[in-house]
Length: 352
Image (cartoon, rainbow, N blue to C red; front, side, top):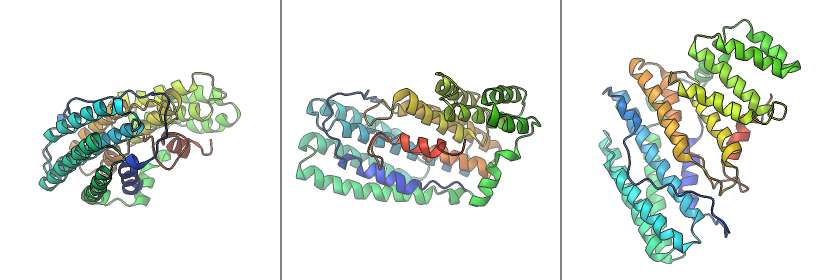
């Protein structure tokens, strides 16, 4: 099954973010997107009351709350040296965390964990506001906050582990994910040969193949392949290559139909959009709100499919990937810009 070491990634970035030295920025590029209230997720539109669907909704909500707070912590980190901005920033984030208290989980233990997590986050923000980042009081309090957050994240990952929901092995996952299984067009082999000698003609052929395809999963494969080629060969495909790729990934998502490649399309859409539209620096605009709005729409599509196909382990796995994949981070192991760059090159820097 597709394993992404989520526990290690999220625990590292969410716990350590406030301790990173951000230097002295002489300019601000960040909209401080402060949600005043928490709106109920689109996944609530799925009214199925099966144990599986209830647990998947709980998982989505819990990880969504963690993403909101992680985003807050990252922006706080940018403004640590600006006292004039910090108070209003923290006021907004405290209000946002208060709004998250309305979210109810069917799992009562999870309810308790989330309630404690929100209370401790608010307390930490208030300590930062009143005592300051360099104070011994804040540092001592933040150590306690880190421990509590680690306990909370450990609970999330043990409760909502992929193995809790499915028995599919990693080998079976990749076997099911193999795109060659779903490609039915006899012309696709011609496309593969042609793209080596004449990429533009090959893409024209693939576009024709895609438009003639009636199966959405097969259509998704062709559209992702088209978009991938525009990303990997942008130097020879013109100034609008990246925008073309973004549009093709997004068009798959906009159809609101189920495919096992929705997560791939969403992730690549986000990667290329951030890299080539919003920027690669730590202070670039990173519209995680926008990315997560589309994430939620895709999650709804998958969850609705699961209500009618509750034995489909591939769909369940795809939903969990959508629910748990980290937001685009500003701070992490890559020191020269935001962390989208790392995932972008891991995804696209391979054999063309």
